[in-house]
Amino acid sequence: MAYAKTATRLKGSFIHQLLVIAICLISYQNVVALHVPHKTTQTSSTSELATPPRSRTFEPIEIPPAVIPHYPFPGKSLPPMYPSFPKTYDPVLTGRCPVNFSVISSITEKTASDCTRSLSTVVGNVICCPQFNSLLHIFQGFYSNRSDTLVLQSAVADDCFRDIISILASKGANSSIAGLCSVKSSNLTGGSCPVKDIGTFEKIVNTSKLLESCSTVDSLKECCRPVCQPAISEAALLISGIKTALGGKNIVGVPNEIDTLSDCKGVVYSWIARKLEFDDANSAFRLLSSCKVNKVCPLEFKQPLEVVNACRNFAVPSPSCCSSLNAYIAGIQKQMLITNRQAIICAAAFGFMLQKAGVMTNVYELCDVDLKDFSLQAYGQEAGCLLRSYPADLVYDNSTGFSFTCDLNDNIAAPWPSSSTVTSLTLCAPEMSLPALPTSEILGNYSCPRGGADLLVPILLFFVSILF
Image 1 (cartoon, rainbow, N blue to C red):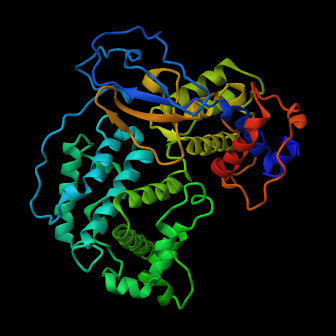
Image 2 (cartoon, helix red, strand yellow):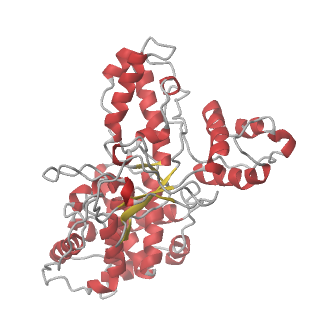
Image 3 (cartoon, rainbow, N blue to C red):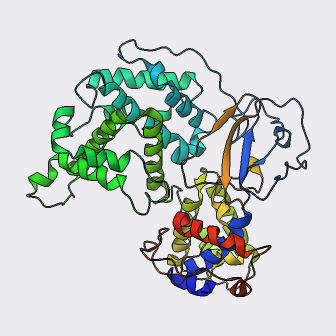
């Protein structure tokens, strides 16, 4: 079956165009690892090229530290993503948290690395905060092993939370991580959830079903065809008592009820963490977080008045329109690193804002706006980085420093919304059987640079199951 038929079944001209582009480009995707060096001893020419990939596989391209110029203003604060290594020291603990933190050192080390002081603000939404929340769930479950309750008392929670922050800060993490991630010590107490002890929890909840659903979270399916998420929600609803209070009607709309459900979800996470190995629990919680963060655009858009005034009446490339649009997007870029899925949503959301204000022409196409333009640019260069939609971590190396992996670093055009509302945008394929895959004869109908029929089968399956 031809590509055009395959794309048509995935609904809409936007998905059609994006699918064709993805099939052509994902085969030749360059996954770039941006390394933050420990120390540069000399200033190198910025024209020095990074080491090219050794093969056509999905291996990262190593960018040597010499490529990054020496920062000439030591008296001023460093710009985002600039080489910076926080000092480590011995933490000062309260002595009132009855936990041996060395037992969960692997998780605290990972969290400190993911929330390193120099990069935490730009990777907070995608990497740091999801990992910090995972650490708190694991700590809460670990603490429950010494008692018959799944939560901490308020006084103990305050002390333990303070110790956790101190330990992370001593390992180089941002000491303001709690504010960055909007987390408080009360998150460890179960809040207003009426069920907090293990005995009652296991009498009310079908724990075997819950454990089976969440012990191994499928990274390919969970975000679009969830198994663990509904199991957690069901358990939280049962122990909240809300369903019983409403006479069996599953209706939640009162703010107090929403808060109670959220608190009860924390209790459910604690029980799951209690049953799983630390690394298994961390992997599961990070995957669940990635499903959540990739559903929304984390960027803040100010009213684009200058863009609207410059682009409203243009149907052809205009220097004033493109200049205004590029200046606006340059401001957005400074906010944070985002994932490939978030970039699609952000581009559609901003396009919808422009359409609502009267800009009906596809200015993304006219001004060559790409998906990576919505994410932070590496070291002030035109090298936007889109993180993978799957959980990622910052990696520390004594010789090269911190690094992370970029995804979709190619020039993939930003999608211009084709309808009057952005709410219809979905990155999950509908429930359907895949159509017949294209043959080598049909391949000639679409020109994919350096393409080959032998690569299209796994790429199409990967694209449909992952990106959508």
